[in-house]
Each structure stands twice: as C-alpha cells, then as structure tokens.
Image 1 (cartoon, rainbow, N blue to C red):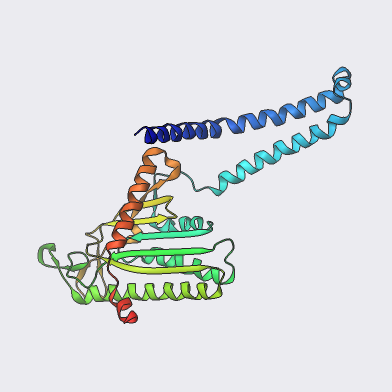
Image 2: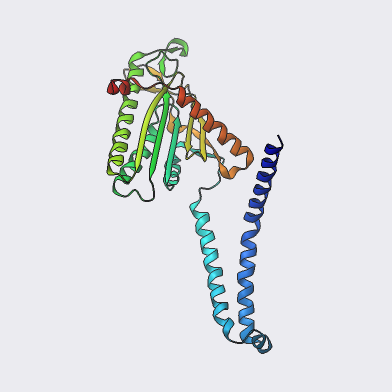
Length: 295
C-alpha cells in the first residue's frame, strides 16, 4: 500500500511540475533572451557598463540573443500550428486530418469500431499506398477494424417493414459483407506489399462482433479517440424500385474528441476505450472470407 501511495504522490508531483513548466517556460525563456539582448546593447552604448563587461565582447552575444528570441517565437508558433486544435467535436468527413496526424508517428496503431469503416478505409488506402514510395519515419503500422457480423440476423441494418418495423434482409446483409471483404482484402494486400519491401512492417485486419452498429469509434495511436453514435434509423434506397433499408450513415456522424491534452478526465476516457477495444478485439471472430483463405 505504501509503495502504491508513494508512486501516486510522485506521479502527482511530476504532473504538477509539467504543468508549471508548460505554463512558465515560454515567459522565462523570452525574459532571459531579451535580458541578454538588453545587457549586450547597453554594454555598447553605456561606457561604464561596457567597461565593466569588457567592452565589445557583448555585441555579438546581444545579436545572437535577439536572433535566438526570434527563432524561439517562430518555433513555438510552428509547434502550435502542427498540433490538432483542441475541439470538443468534429465531423466524420474530417477523419483524414486525424489519420494524417497519426501517420507522423514511428509506430502507427489505428483501431475502428463501427459499421463498415468505409470513411476510414478511404483515408487509409491512400495513406498506405503513399508509404510504398516514401515511408518516411514510419516503421510499424497496425490497423484493426471491428464490424458487425453480417452473417447473423439483424435489426440494423435491415429492411423497413410495415409501420417502420425492421425486417431482417439476408441479401442486404450479404451486400454489406461483400463490401467489407473487399476493404479488408485491399488493405491487407497493401500491408503485405509494404512488409515485403522491408522498410515497414504493416498489418491490416477486419474482425466481427455480434452486435448492431450503434457506436462509431476511432482510436489513433492509443492517444486520441473519436466517438460518436450512428443514427440507427437512417434510411436508404438502393434503386427506385427497391424498398427502404435501415442503413446508418457513418459520414454524417459527429464525433467527440478525447485526447491526452484534455486533462485527467479525458485520459481516463482514453484508457477505458483502449481497454474496451482490446477486449472486444480479443473476443471477436475471424470473418468467413479470412477463415476460408486460411483453410
């Protein structure tokens, strides 16, 4: 007990120190650089000060401190511009921004829990294809998709029956399963090509869970989570002569952002989603198209 308490106290002190550092470091650095510049110029303009500070030796230092001050400001501005803005909610069509940010890391890990993953698939396809030409600093890529088991009877997706009641439609489910199979095979082939080149090890995989698509979750490098709820009553018509189907629209789903920069509450949510996704992945089934290929 005392050991855990000691670690908790140490972690708390470390977090307070980091907060104080982040708060005061810019001010202290600017003050020191400007102070050096002022002292250096004063040494040139005020003779007693110059004599005391050995005359002209401080002019170069003054100029260097001014240059350092300007560079410091530029670097701070650049670092700020490269960070994703702290926003409470984003639209699904903005996923590309988060994918690009995730692919700046040396190890890229992306998890998806949702419907078919079409929006994320489109972003990942172009990103992985680009790695064939220039992987940059990336050395490992792991992408995991958790989707519903479309081989089971479902209320969503389904056909809209009399009075709006959901009616299971095996043909519609089969159409969705084929779409996911195509996504899985395309990304897997890209990952295998990357791995064969030897510069990047990559793995992409779809697995199935026994549920309906209610939550849309994207986990980026275990440091940022996007979470939204599908409109499970959204309808679609494939052809003018076809009936309506309950078919959630992922690209219309708004997503809440949880990141490491959101404080202790956000970090707790991140840890929960990472743990939940890993648990679901461990229990998820292999899709029939993968099982057939492995046989």
